[in-house]
Amino acid sequence: MQMQFHYVSRLLVTVPWIAISVACGPIAPDRPSEATLIYLAEDVPAGLDYDGPAAALPTSQTGMVNLMEPLIGYAYGDENEDGVALPDFETFAPRLSESWRYNEARRSWVFKLREGVFSCAGNELTADDVVYTFARGKSVSGAIPVGWFLASTAGVSGFDASVFEDEAARVIGDAVRRVDRYTVEIRVSGRNALFLPIMTTYGMLIFDSKETQKHATDDDPWAHDYVNNVTAPGFGPYCLERWAKNDMFVMRANENYYRGAPALKRVVIKRIPQSSNRFILVKSGEADMAERLTPREFSALADVDGARVAGVVGNETLFLHMNFKTPPFDNLKFREAIARALPTEKIIRNGYFGEARAWRGVTPSTYPGFVDALDEDYYDPDAARRLLAEAGFPEGEGLRGFQESLRLAYVAEKEATLGPIATMLQTALREIGVPVELDPIPLTQYGDRQLVKKDLPFALNDQEKPVVVDAGYALSLFFASPDAGGINNMVNVADPSVDAAALAAASLPAGEERAARIADGQRRLAEIVAWAPVVEYRTQWAVRDHVSGLTWHPDNAVRFADLEIAR
Image (cartoon, rainbow, N blue to C red; front, side, top):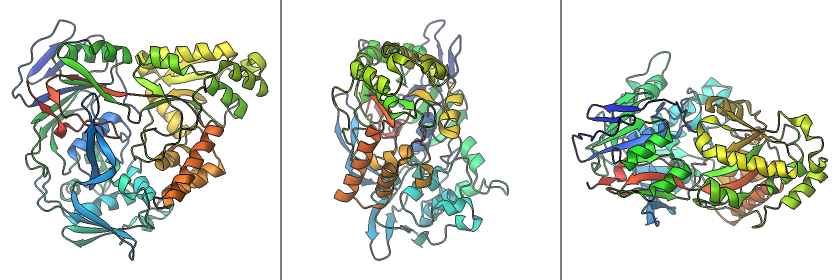
């Protein structure tokens, strides 16, 4: 999910040492240091607890990953043509742990932690911090049980559904235990292929347990309120200096960071809701970076001296959501007709200005295990008309009775990007006889209907990204039925073959059998048109030329410690 936008008629950015007025013209910033970076976003973090209500918001994740640190990460590979370093998904790299091994006899992973790692509060990392982090997740005491879900998917012992019924089952026990001050053992059900990839994600970041527990209360023993609204105590490269929600998020470098003090000594994330204003401020040089411009604005920035667009085709996609429980989308032939009528190349050309490519599957094509499940000539309006007739609606006859279901919803706050694309889709579908109306709705309503109620009939979605780099994980996350452990099955697909593939993805070790089962699941999803894939689009940033070192990660959050400024 994306963060909520707020529109303003006049923009004024004010921090202690910078004033920018779009209405009145730029005022040159008086920066206290050459090592300060100004980053413009749609919003600042709304919360910092990955078990909290803001866990899925991208800017909240940006805050988390810069204040905290995982046990392991991915090694960096080559840079792409934009100078963005890409992760090597085949190679795990030490982070808070310096080594790890699997103990076959005990069915456990043993992590040896680095010594001499200190948090912003001055506490040294120990095995107690890892045990606390997993115990907090198993408590399922937060608004959203992200930590529990990821540990469960990773196969950690005892992280099962019993925690929701039995309070005693929420105790960590010996599932995660301290071996010595710098060694921790994590028991698992078997050698799950997802275990190590999951350990790299934002939902497995390690807490400074001493500092966090200082802020526990009788009513909030795991300090969710403090973490969500004050800071996330951790061992990351930055410490939180100032946080004004809906306005500004300022971080200072952790000079004791175990990988070396960051080159950027201060990072200011400033909320600028309108993308056009973010564009102006980067173009003028009054900000260093910005995210989430429109495709048109990114295209225009490419011709600006002193600025550039940096990006990567990572894991962001656009697809049509059709709810299996809502007629006429319960009709396979009808879903096929819709999918065949989507003008992909036109959308790439006119909607994304060439910065996208056709998506021919249901998981990101950059992920291990992806299957190209659709023909290159999948767009075929004549075939769409034929399928519409086979569905019982020749030339759209009878579809006027489904007017509410045929309202194409999308996030209203994304009108500048999604509005033109939605109009192209409306035109294409009307041409085959489907009387689509457009229905932009507020993000909060969209998220509630998609993720909680799961009653949204028809929607244009560009905000789902599986942060665990594995096609099997994506399959489990989005398409497994609730009986098979699915939590984000927004279209209510319930297919035994898909559930079996999801189970295999979460239980089998890496190898040919697991890969084959995941491939079968993806082909089955394409057959039943679980989603109607449209494009994979580039994740992009507007960047001034003096900024270097950008890296891409599956959560799409910038790691500011990787950046340098040469003014």
